Length: 427
Ligand code: NIG
Ligand code: FE
Image 1: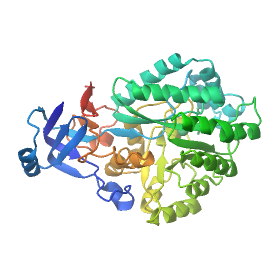
Image 2 (image 1 turned 60 degrees about the vertical axis):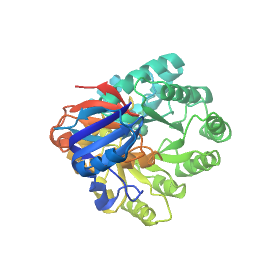
Image 3 (image 1 turned 90 degrees about the vertical axis):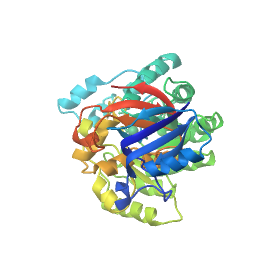
Image 4 (image 1 turned 180 degrees about the horizontal axis):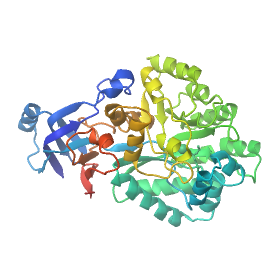
């Protein structure tokens, strides 16, 4: 199927001409074209540009059969990329949510046997088909709010069989979900230690057994560690990333969520694709990240901030403005999980980023598209509307892209195009 979308009120391309993530002032450059046009050939974008450019393109194109969509009064953006989620899990933790409302902290609940370990028990008691069904329903929610690519982490298994089970569910869903959502899997064995094992034993198991199997079976692209008091130290993360690298897995980190215990340094040492959370990030670590991002020879690390967690847990918000002022590229994600952020709605996160992180609508758009693509190493395929990229587009019925954060709490999304196919009419 080929499609021409014509006369688009506002076409937001998020084009990244420099082929680097958007940082500093560039984080505001969204590549806006008024009365723009997009030509989709099969699953790819063949053209995106102005009316004059379209004429030239059509004259030179051999493709004469195509559907036409009227883009007047619409805003079109790249499909959103949710680059940090834990969407494969069983059970739920609304009881903990209520305990927190009554004054208990996330850490107190975890110490008393709740938190991550309670979801681990639920996952261990579920089989693959139950997990697949639950997770498939969550994909329906992700795409309803515009996420056409979703990263997902293991970490609710905490032993070989159960970690593989979660990753296999993601593999199956990636190959077969009704919208063609791209699912990018991350191995997060080091999410917590299950009391059945000593930490030394479990870390040994991760490094000397699980990583090699995950890699051999092609079950993950990334390896993540929760660097935090009572979870994993920077030295343990260092060791786990060293083994991960040997098996072709790129580092990502949960770090500086409640305490700052050296995760940033470890992330930089291992050229992490992203460092995520950053609610209590220290000045020194911001400087380290800024220096790393300045170095043209190194691939930028994306700072992925998760304001939904701050909102849901009542903890500080990450210093997004400071990150942007220091030219560190910022991405936004839901961190969808049953404990610290129970929402698949990336638009809600965009609103929080506007109100609480004081990010502009433009910065936010790049944070959920091209910068998020860089956080997943998929920037050559996804994250912007440019010739040659996969045709993942969102059509919104609203007068301006600014309505995404201004007219909040309303889903303006009308149509989702994934890999060149109309896969969903929302409104
Ligand atoms: O990203 N911080 C660690 N992991 C998750 C929470 C997981 C859970 O509570 O189940 C997070 O916030
Ligand atoms: Fe997380």
